[in-house]
Length: 193
Ligand SMILES: C[S@@+](CC[C@H](N)C(=O)[O-])C[C@H]1O[C@@H](n2cnc3c(N)ncnc32)[C@H](O)[C@@H]1O
Image (cartoon, rainbow, N blue to C red):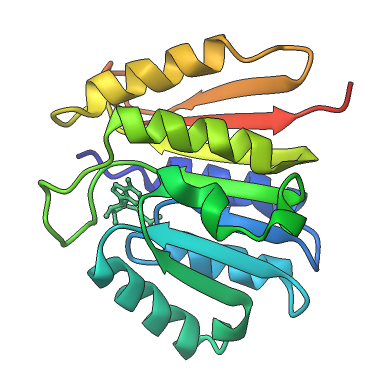
């Protein structure tokens, strides 16, 4: 899997401008917790970040990072498939999530056979856009360069294409490496009609 530091940096830059103190955010793929830590830093003491991963190693790694930064009070980690996200988010917060991040693929430094799967990714994406606030932002980094990742990226692209353009604005950022297998960043903004 191609490392895409610059696309992740782009996602962070866009979200840093978008997030406000007190916001609620979701990290749909915890991994090593860099995105959760970033979100926790930007929602402020009144905000909250919900984080999901299927692997306990990801929760542990994220927990350690947040504890070191003394931000654990703002973070709630959930070991479950992100397809089940709505069941874990209090009903009162549905439609009030200002930012949701996905970073697909496998846990860096972990088991490379445990990867996101397009069927559950699409269920999670559909749930995510319902959870977003009327002006919420969703970012997703996809990696077509690894087995399964190409099909997943294609499915995500099709999913974006069928979004109602009256309600969503989609922008795709490509990595500097000009190859079909290079990672890409999808940024979806909900727009008020
Ligand atoms: C590329 S990593 C995420 C990197 C992370 N955001 C960071 O900042 O370090 C992808 C993660 O997705 C997780 N994952 C795979 N399938 C999942 C699913 N269905 N639901 C939730 N997490 C999943 C993997 O366990 C892995 O930790």
